[in-house]
Image 1: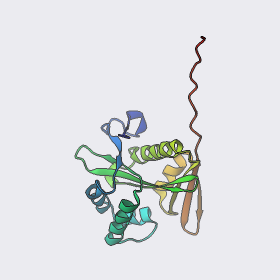
Image 2 (image 1 turned 90 degrees about the horizontal axis):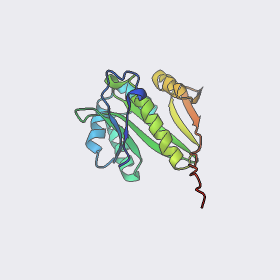
Image 3 (image 1 turned 30 degrees about the horizontal axis):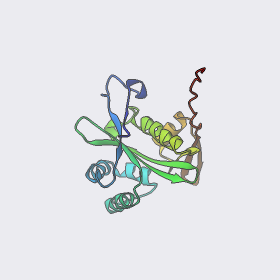
Image 4 (image 1 turned 90 degrees about the vertical axis):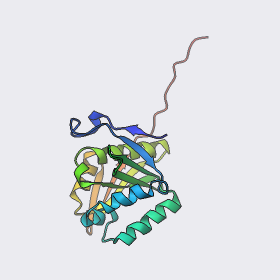
Length: 179
């Protein structure tokens, strides 16, 4: 399984956050957890995630779509097995676009940053060149996070795009042994 454990140094408040794992999600198998996660978000959070007003039916249609297309998703579950942070990944040419949501009580603890790191690893492993986010220009938390991880952020006409150029994976050189 493609699981990454969040270590204390990966989160902002290591004393308050138990060790949690970033796990791959299957949009069909984990449908209820995804529905519950999106249902727990405030209207403004949904507006930020989907770059505009969206009704619950729209979220259902989105979940139907990612189930059919097999969109790669990763998530963080809390001790009660509630899905508290989610990212969905979409390949766009040579880059990977990331959609990210974190439940309000779990924000500012490093989960979003850890999911972006996981997304960058996913992209590098597939030879992609960059990591992108698309957001509303007033989504200060997302834009702040994007800048903290080194993204260049451009805001135009109320929308924002962030881009991080990824370093390619370095091949490991094995020492040669004399014969």
